[in-house]
Length: 233
Image 1 (cartoon, rainbow, N blue to C red):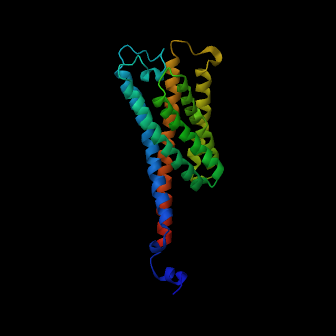
Image 2: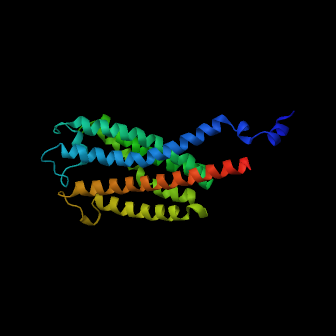
Image 3: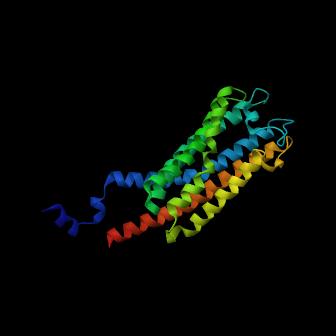
């Protein structure tokens, strides 16, 4: 009996590629991690700040929570490394899910890369403590600025993801505006509120990451279930 004849008689699940199943399971798990990673980062900053008496969230940078003046810098540093690793996994999930949803492989890969750079930046922040000159490497985390743009590009024109694409494009311009103000454009920022601007930009980027990961995970799950039902019919 040939394979084709067997496929017509036996359940299609017997002929499903194990590697494909593993990729499918990993992608869904990575997207769920993408929802959790932003919460880990926010919780880590909040806890480290609570354990730093006298810390001025407006005038001081987030990185100082892991510096030598912090009473328990390991809280911030270890937390950033853990959250950063989660961000790397999230980037892989984004790349695969966006390609599956939109069919634009290169654009999806860049979107996933920018998400992963956010995680890498957090890892650098936790390993190279402020004011170590190598701490500047955490600046790669600003890649989150471009993740919404490339996610919108990857999904543009796909009816099932129209709202996420439009939301991501609008969010990109909002992040761009906040980043411009953070860097001193129009002299809105002062030396007494730079910490708030930094937190605002980071929070907005992480919020988009959580929303996009949650939406993609739902779409990914629905698409997989649809394919399974079609194959089993």
